[in-house]
Image 1 (tube, rainbow, N blue to C red):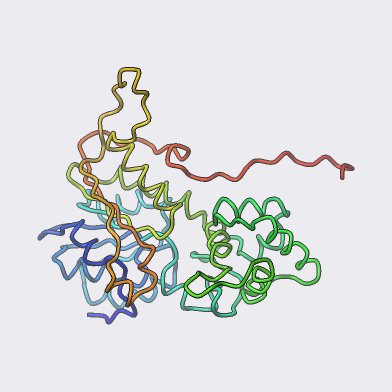
Image 2: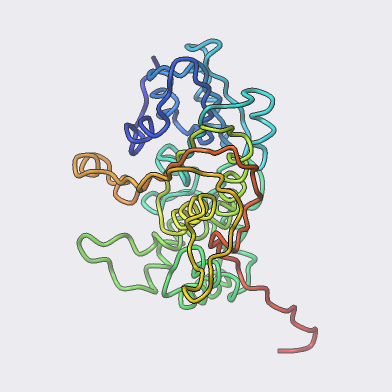
Length: 334
C-alpha cells in the first residue's frame, strides 16, 4: 500500500461513523493525500470514488489507484460537480466522507501560497483556475477587503488590516505571502506563547474567498443528501467555527431538530426528516492533538439518511456568511 505522508485527523472516528461493510461503495469527496481513502479500503470498502478539485492531489494519488484496480477511482472535480461524478462513477453510494478546508499537503508546499509560515507566491487556489489571493488583495477596495477579513476570518482588526493592505499596495504590489504577513503583523500585537499566529485569521479569510469554500460546502452537503439512499451515511470533518456551524445546522434542520419555534404556539409540522440519528460531535483526544496540532480544531459530525425526499439547502438558514452588497459609487462623487 502507498505510504501516506500524513495521518488525517479523526481517522478512526470517521471510519467508525461510516462503518464500511463488505461490498460498500463509498465516496471520499476530499481525497487530499488519500488518508481516509486508504483507511476505508483497508476497512473493507469494495469501491471508493475519490474526488478532489486539486489536480496535484489527483496526480499524486494515481499510484494508489493503480494499487487497487477496480476498487479505487480518482476524479478531478469540485463540489459543484459531485452529483454528476457520483452518478457516472459510483451511483447509489453507501456513504460520503468529507474533510473540509485546506489539506496538510497544500499547507506544506510554500509555492501554493496557503501558509503564513513560509514565503511563497500569494496564490491559495485549491484548483488550477480563477483569481488568486494576490488578485483579490490587488483589486478589492478597502471596505470589501475588510468585509472578507471580518466575515470569513472573524478578524476583529479587519478594518485596520484592510487599510494597511491598501496603503502598502500603493507602494508596491503584494505578491508574496511573506510581505502580507509583515503587513498584518504591523497591525496587531505580537502573539503570546500558545496563541495562534496573528496572520491566521486573515489567511483563512482570503483562502475562503479565493475558493468559495463555504458556498462549496453548502453545495456539497446538498449533493450528498441527493446521492445517498435510505441508510446512507454522511461524515464531515471541519476545522473552524464557520464550517462547523453550517454542517451542524444542516443536520439539525434535516433531522427536524433545528428548534426555534415559540413555546406559546403549537409546533408546526415541518418536512419529513431527511437525516436520522445525527451523532454527537467528535473531537480529537490528547494523544492525537499532541502528535498533530491541526487536530486541535477538528470536529466530526455524521448522520444517516432516511427515505425522505432530498431538499435544496437554504444557505441563509445554514448560517452561510454573505458579504454585504454595497451600492456602486456614482462618478464624480468622493
